Length: 418
Image (tube, rainbow, N blue to C red; front, side, top):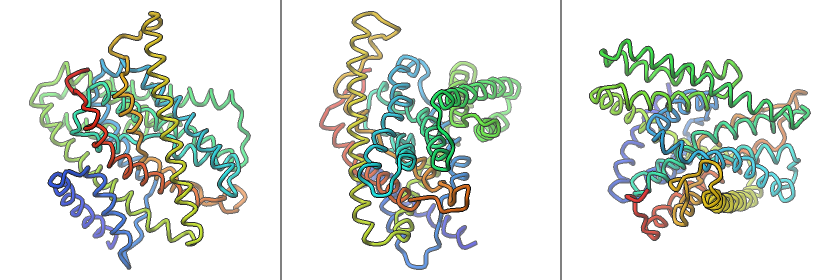
């Protein structure tokens, strides 16, 4: 009951601070994170621990589904080359870059542990990116790329994390088996999403005159799809994304405007509450994580977190601008299916590079680290990995989140230009 009361109070604070953020022209995620940190230092406050299973089941499916549901399918398809590059290739590049630094500069970090930390911090967060960029007047293409990347890269990061943790616990890592498992997880997740998406469109066609029943099915299906995929040991993230894309196409062709408005209003409220709660919970984690390390360790770990943030940002900028060059060359040579609409200009490449915030998924993965190994011994460097992950998430959200609106304003983006 005590934790239940605390959650209700936090929700009330979140709603009030979101309204205040509009008044003071500050991205509400930043205000909520700072509030969460302040609340976490209140004496006698119960320790609100993020349960990874709850995060992945309660938060992830509806937020991913909502983003996929509202994304432009045609623009997603046009920019699929850039999206896949950022969501798959960049994830593994970032994980490797962070792992190399961690192994050589953080005491006690073996290669498997370094790759665990790299996998945790390899993916950007869709909730953070969309919440902070909302209302900045970005071009549709930029928004589609950021949303599309964040929809897919969680699956890549989770798969990399799974392999890294297995290596820590002693399992042998074989490249061809890992690659095969990666494609099975991704392909299996896509298949589950496709089946459930087509099943949902069939059901909606039968009951679409009853708006309450239709919306109920729309609300229920992301959770069902995610659970089925995870039970089948394939990617629940990808399954929900595919579900959302299928329903988005169906919605635009076969649903009435009244049904769209009713469904949109309900989803807006759900997403608003979940987003706000996520950012306060992110802020709450710092005070609780700090308690698990000594003061002498805190300053070095903050330094490690800052350097990892810079490494992730630098690798992202390099990869985005290389992608810009590659797209231009492919378009000029007429290779592949690269159209003029898929090309990236300098300004939007810079914005995409700067929008790589980490968030709730990274924290959930970190906190979900096993407590012990198979032999019963403690999971090595667990507290250090969690603390560094929290620090990097806060650095990216607060640092990049505060500077992104300024950057967009300085670049004078024309949102009417695709």
